[in-house]
Picture 1 (cartoon, rainbow, N blue to C red):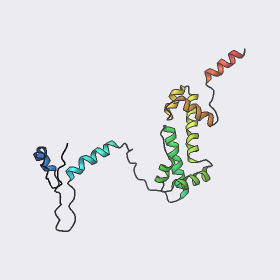
Picture 2 (picture 1 turned 60 degrees about the vertical axis):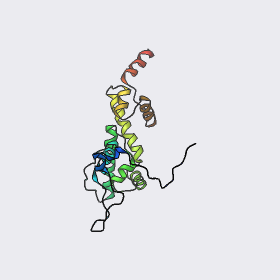
Picture 3 (picture 1 turned 45 degrees about the vertical axis):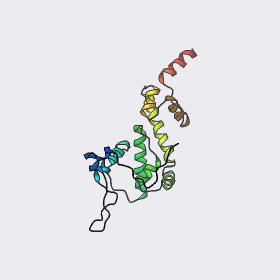
Picture 4 (picture 1 turned 180 degrees about the vertical axis):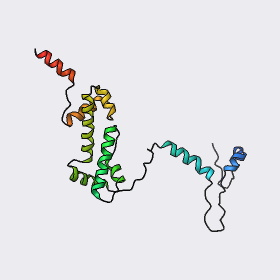
Length: 184
């Protein structure tokens, strides 16, 4: 049978808390009031390691240089279209809300304006640019797997799905020759 300790029984501190390093990191239970009346700040020795570990664990892209934002909406839309095009051609993933935030527009307002200005939604435009790039790379003679990786897909099946959805894939030169030879 176990006996519960009364609440008033003090628990002796562990000897590991009496080391010089532990005493240096200890924070007083009741912070002393500062002369100005402001509360005491947390020691930076405790905050810094946590902040560094948290910052290192996040994988955020480096901040882009802050260029002045165009005043007119049409210039903002052109800037957004260029950003979507460059990401699609480089095989990078991009979300329309990221572009909208950079342009200081709401996601839905940006999508409506984009569709009105260019006739396509931002996502469809992104897919169209990727499909154009894939067709060009396939015409150069690259394998489907390599083209898929270059435009940001993991598998050739994703590339085939995109191309069939966006107007079909061009027939590679080798397949056209084989089909002509079998017709004779």
